[in-house]
View 1 (cartoon, rainbow, N blue to C red):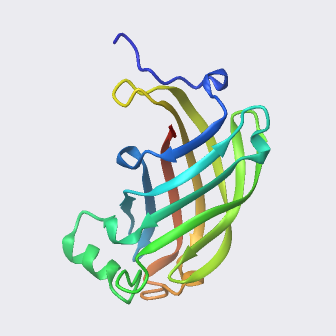
View 2: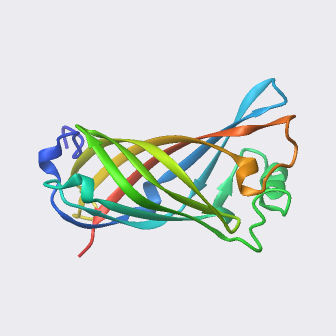
Length: 183
């Protein structure tokens, strides 16, 4: 092909139910380490559903399940520590879940309010989302739409206070998600 199949053109999006395309969806996080520098990590393999109608985008709903055991950092020892009871406690709490409660659209951007359940604790968060592209995936042959989103949380709100203040409490989240139309 001479160009990428996805384009940030809202007219390419059709109404329907879409599923997270897990292979190309990532949730990245950034946290300050000892006040020296920021450290990055990623959650992969999420699943979930988007119900979307471009004629009524404010009526959209999204839910995403994040397998916290799919946490990845550049250091295996650190990854294992983050999976322990000091942080995510993946043995007891294998999945985090985001469920939207409202969507407020402004052009190709949106505020997606919802709840994040992590370690059995549910708190409200708001995602700043942006439509990034739509088209037909050349491999799956399915209609695909993409979004990016950001938010910030305090890890202590979800019972992960280990190391504060040496390791920051504020966590920046950056989400890149592709959805494929079901059916």
